[in-house]
Every structure is written in C-alpha cells, then in structure tokens.
Length: 273
Image (tube, rainbow, N blue to C red):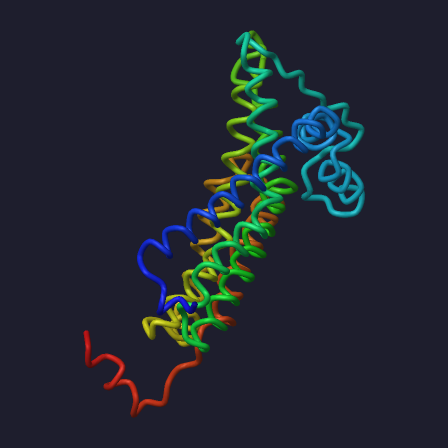
C-alpha cells in the first residue's frame, strides 16, 4: 500500500512504529552509555580541566614559534570539580549517558524520519531533503567538535583563571561545569546549521549567491564581533581561532546556495511578493 492509499489511522500506526523503534534505540544506547560513561568521563568530558588536554598542548608547542599564542608553556593547569549537591553526581551520570545515546542515535533517528516522510515526496524533493538531512547532520557534528576542542576550552580556561581579587578562591561545581559544557557545545552545533538555513532559503528562491558577495565585508565584521562575545579573553589568537570557523560558515553558505538567475527571470521570481 502506498502512502497515498493509506488512511489517517494507517499513517498514525506507522508513525507510532517509527517512534517505538527510535525510543528502543535510545534505550539501548543509554544502557551502553551507562556502561561506558564512568570509563570515559575523565578522559573526555573532564579533559579540558587538565593541562594535558590536546588543545592546550597544541597551543603550548605552537607558542614556541608563534609569539601571540596564549602562553601555556610550562603550565600545570588543573581544576578540581566540586560536588555540592547529594544527587548531582548520579544525575550527571544519567544525563551524560542519555546525551551519549542521543549523539550516537542521531543517524538512526534521521533515517527513521526519512523513512516516514520520503514516500510522500516527489523525486526532486526526495533528493533535496536527503541532501539536507546528510548535510545538516554533518555540520552539526562539526560544530560540536569545534565547540569541544576550541570554543569551550578557551572560554573555560579564561574564566576559571580570571582573578578579580587574590582573596577569592575559584571553586567550580559539577553543575556549573556540565551546564556550560553542554550549552557551549550545543550552541556551536546549532550555529553550524547556518549554511543549511541559507540553502533552504535559496531553495525557496529567497536568496542567491550575489547576497554573499555583497555582504562579505559585513560578514567578516559580524564573525569578529560574535567571536569577541564568545571568547572573553580577548587575546588575538583566541579571536582568530573562533572567528575563522564562524566566517567559513558564510563562505560555505555562499557555495551551497543557488547562483543568481538571469536578469530577465527576476521579475517572475518576485511577482508573488
């Protein structure tokens, strides 16, 4: 039976089957997360609290040749995380396991959504939406990696070492660390969906490549201002490291959108506005 021949209740049954499979996958992966999280928590989630973190070591080596890099040479940076709530460690264990499940279930989740909606689409729509799923998922993962390896460590390191007064000791709670950890990484994942948004707008005929050529200088300034807001340290290298991926999103967007239509077709495009 095709999608067109299915009744409302048939669609509902199929949707329920999709949701059950997605929930089952999440449950299984959450159990896997419950097994793995205690083993990887220190080496992955808490890795930025130590000077052994890969980003800090790269900066330390690079600082020998590039003078304006953050000075991590001879550093023994280490931050102790405090637990001030009886249930926080357990809840962090559960939430981290669930976050693990969502991350690794994303490809299957997209597949189930695609499996449900694709039969109702035309052939050209099928190709475009499949590309959107793949491209959007890839860019989200890239954004999360940029957040984990660049944005979060730089912000964390600056804020935890910032000293307003020598009489104040910095003590970091587990709640605060995990909240900022997840927030910054997810924000970067979402920000990296910008090319997908522009691609959708271009598919609707609302934006074309000339827009990106015209406002390229504005994009550079905007990326710099956003990077300055994200990285409170203000040192040139941190600004550069965060600005570059943000600006590259603009160039990627310019690449994926449609070329400008011939001038004679422009009146037809804007007739409906």
